[in-house]
Length: 178
Image (cartoon, rainbow, N blue to C red; front, side, top):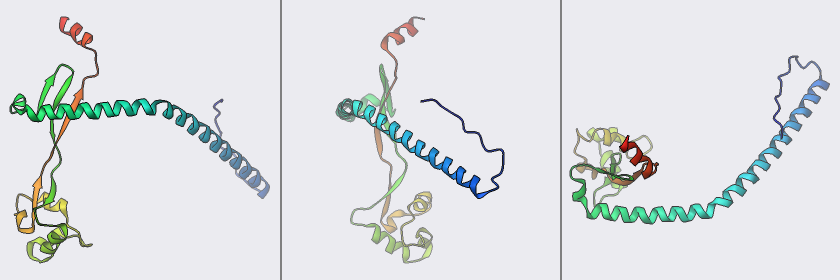
């Protein structure tokens, strides 16, 4: 299909007949737009269908191999020393620290935490107007307050990662020889 440009009208619409014509043109353009969009979506769906099965197999393979790699990393923590990652030939392996988040202590629920915060005093500022624990504010003030008083603790979970270097070993050998 050819691409065409639509020039903005240089004149002002002065009559109802001109407006009727303009609305008809806009309607035709909208129909063309819908037709082209439908054709495009059909082609996209066809291409997606062509690759979906293979991508599913690849994704399952990555998931299985990541689990094996994580098991190795957990069993061989000594390999990391004080570092959180190891540089390997084909990529880096390690652990990333996630953002701080709040979890309740054993035996506590968020409803119970809210009750405790609503009891008053310094804790009221951690309650939102709609009764809900202000976890972000509790996290922000965690160094000045004792979260155990209201049944909370700060956790920071690690997420395992592998960051591939998308290059060939031959390229690396050539660079090393240079």
